Length: 458
Ligand code: F0G
Image (cartoon, rainbow, N blue to C red; front, side, top):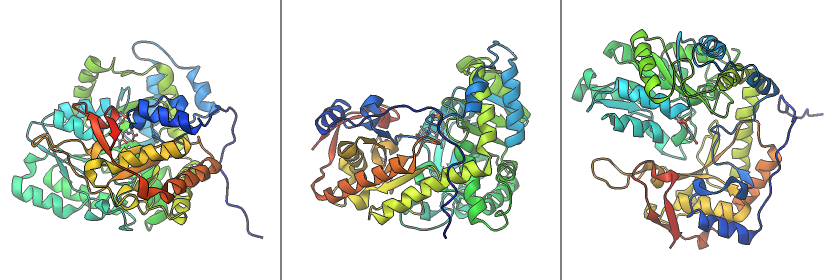
């Protein structure tokens, strides 16, 4: 007899009811939201795959940790507990908490980038690039070419192309680079990991040039799981050992705790650079709060410390990433064009192949996200030309090679049967794809436009 696969290493203690609106109400909801899934009321959504950010289900231990939060303004016990967890799991001695990831990015960008300096990243993330550009930095994409091809089956599409970095240094010199801002499980590439071998090589190169590496460690542990299952030499290591090696190549990290760390709010900077630590502490008090809470309640820091230890449980991380893999496989079997290989936190539908009759000027991924909602109340997110925004120099749309719809899986929230329903919904949209029209943008905010832009069907 074949044994069933090992199921989730948890059971459900509390539930939240959800309901599917009838088709006419869904049509009204999407119109009111200006065809932008960020503008829904969440009550109008049945299955919410907008993001894995802050949407995790906390464990009973995290909920009970909330009760022992120390809400002292200064020097709270909860801060020291979090600091201890960061030292244990990530290996950095210094911690500056922030209310979420972009606040850590803001402080890092302001302190570490001189106007005109390049900041190479393995592809980009929306808020990170926004902050680096606000600080006067110049974004430089150093990811391997395969990352821009949704069908390239490279196991580590998040890898850095050292040739590209070499060329940049040859042309402008190492001083023109503020630091390398690299992300594990590159979100905009489809949740694609980098390999430890690649990071090691980049770190050696960066050391020779005296260029620091700052990791956006938001989904580092999910990346470590891919290293464990795809890279030689890691298969027998407990997951907990892998982040420590990864972090050893970085000077600092910026972090959105709302993902890997299994909490609903939180972020931080962690570093081994004492000068940066001191400067970040001095800055956090202006924008976030005192340096021992940085915009968080004591209870938030307690829940984060517990979540950090839960995320490096081997059974948890396997069940998390493998659920996403199964979901991607089921979409492929339904004939839906997706980014391959499937990433760690989401499955990305390739809107260019799904809707080949629509040009990027009519926002195919935005239109597809609206159709997926209309079909079955499933909320997804555009990750294409709308998210890419405008070039700060020319003011023109940036046309990314990847025009994607992200179906993002919150951690410990949905069962495989919820996801089987989503596969059916996508199949339904796929069957009527030829009749789907594009959109026109009727309102566009000046920055991070994807959050609030409004659209109208053409
Ligand atoms: N870095 C990465 C790689 C992210 O994915 C995010 C957020 C941030 C930084 C910013 O963190 O939201 O805590 O301020 N990503 C969310 C998403 C919003 O849906 O992918 P934040």
